[in-house]
Image 1 (cartoon, rainbow, N blue to C red):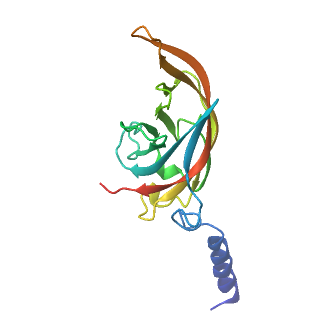
Image 2 (tube, helix red, strand yellow; image 1 turned 180 degrees about the vertical axis):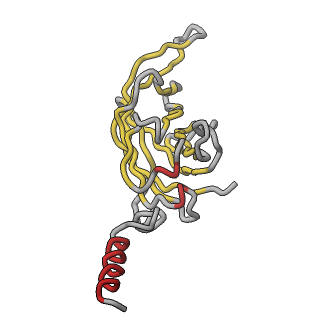
Image 3 (spheres, rainbow, N blue to C red; image 1 turned 90 degrees about the vertical axis):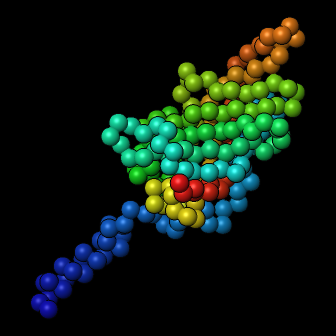
Length: 192
C-alpha cells in the first residue's frame, strides 16, 4: 500500500474514532446513576415522581417529522389514590443525545403537564402561559430514546404553577406558585 494512501486511511480512522460515523454518544442506559426520583418543591412541600417510561406514542410529532416520544412518570410521594403525573413530549427524538436541553426549547421537548395531589387536599398544576426556566439532562440516551436499557433524566430549575385548593364554599381558590425541579430518575423504554 502506498505511504500516502496508508496515511490517508490512518487519518480517516483517527477522525472517526473521535465521533464520526456514530449517532450515539457514550454508553447506553442509565449506568450507575443514583436515581431516587424527580422532585417538585414548593414552599413547605416536596413531591416526588418516579417509574418514568418512554414510548413512541406520537403525541406531538411535527408535520412530516419523526415519531415523537412521550416521557412520563407518576407521583410516588406523597402517595395518592389517583395517579398524578409529570409528562413531557419529545417531538424530534432523533435530534436528542445525552446532554442538557432547556425545557423552554419546545422544538426538542415540551413540558406537557405536572400534576400533584398534596397532603392538605390541595393540588398542583403548571401554568402553561409561562415558559419554564429549567433544564433536563439526558444520560445514556441511545437509539432515539428506545434502547432496551432505557436512559436517565435529571431536572433542575423552575416553572410557574398554581396551587388549587377547596375554598370551603364548593368552589376552589387558585394561588400562583413557583415549582422547583430537582432529582434524577431512570427511564424505562417501552416498545409498542
